[in-house]
Length: 140
Image (cartoon, rainbow, N blue to C red; front, side):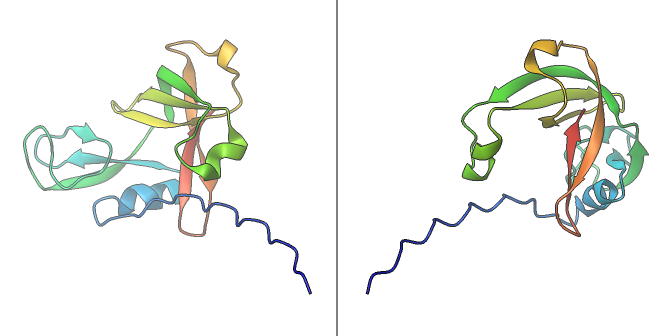
């Protein structure tokens, strides 16, 4: 009696793990908002969320909704993704965007071909629900 070989399991998508400092950011994405951390002492905005302000070292902060628009700073085309989950989507573009709120964010860029991209091109942050708790950003 022979058994047919089983197909290899599909690789799992890597998922972020929200922390106490980043939970408001992830909740905002789930609600269709870009929530950025602002220092309660010096007022500077920061991204990625973290416990200490890199400018004045205050540990007090608050999250505020930010505009979803920005300009392309640079991009890369991923032909050999770091994780096997993304291999089926290759090649894909990841953009680093200077957000109008004053921070840089990197995320996948969709709907624009590489040949049509330019430094300084306006893009908008969009949201892809992955699970009931996690929504990931991308640019259009």
